[in-house]
Image (cartoon, rainbow, N blue to C red):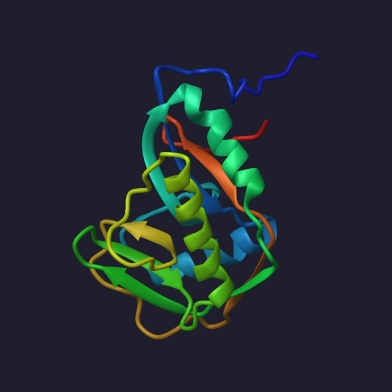
Length: 175
């Protein structure tokens, strides 16, 4: 069978820039994109909206199968995310959407992933405590005021391994 889809397990070079994320479905993605109406700055393309669980950065391409094994071993119990607030990281100037109350299951999933990565010899880049959010815009000057008109309800059942491609796209890696 001929496809235009690249072989995502084939080494594209000596390293690949990857991260683990919660990846929204079409309905959740559209609802998250609608939240961008309240923000200023360089809006994230809707296709790139996600919630990062662990950023690994550049890893040897030969490590991708092991990272997929870790993803496949994660036990993701159903998690209901209620994206109901806005926030702002001033240092990188990022406007984001998040949860006023982060589900314990999400915190546990993040902890399990970090422990699995460490046990396999990988180090996830962290910038302090886990602060789950969806980046809405970069180069923003402030957080949106108030709360979203309606919360985004996002039922999560899986985590994905995503590659940040040189052309700027984010693409989940599948076997």
